[in-house]
Length: 342
Ligand code: ASP
Image 1 (cartoon, rainbow, N blue to C red):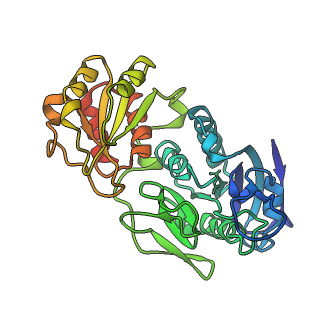
Image 2 (tube, helix red, strand yellow):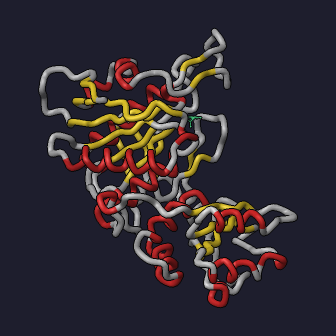
């Protein structure tokens, strides 16, 4: 479904496609007052209404809004992720758009952003934004986040920087950003720092990326029909091998082991990892700490076990990168190289 929204007379304004997918930015309170609270329903406000709620948008860009999904971002399956990536790639390929903004729930925004960052071959700005408070709350953050996201997507300096997440005046790279707080409006952070800030409505850049993305990525959504199944198992005291066996039986081609500290595998599970590898299931070691690299062969003999380490990727992004790598190779050494590169 596509509807023209908030467009006025043709001008030299950048032409931006807005793809709405739901989330709290499209949420409305159910509690009857404007106090920010958890009493709201996400994914009910339409794309057109979102745009209409931010009058300054029309000055920034010639916007065309469409409602691709109307879901809580917890409901992003791989199928929906692929559908969104195809749509964004198609919009970027159209000469009549200069950039794309995606409104999205915050809970899985980092996964969607990273997937687009790796699979949409474009130099045009692709910017995700959302909100921690529904539009009916006092001091709702959605309208200003949307305004800033459009400002970033519309600015020529944003081209070629990969997929961006704009929240709370910060511009993050999809490679690094994570939701790190369940409630506050400053819920997003990047371990190596944000790329930039929106200052007086204009992007100001402080860092660049060194890893490939979008146009320079070897992955292209046009060549991906489905994603191989990759499971994630979180570490905790008293782990059981049955969780790994369940993923293997379900057809997982890789399991992200979210280890303690820098990715540690408990002694009582160490023999299991090479066993999984021998069953055709790659084991990818990540860390549950949330920041810092997993060092190969440091606290586990990855060479002997045939396992892969994630560098500094968080487990949820590692799942996606492993799945993409598996569309190209089944070789653990090559998958390791993919993690070093990206
Ligand atoms: N549950 C919501 C979502 O991710 C949360 C949000 O958007 O902030 O869709």
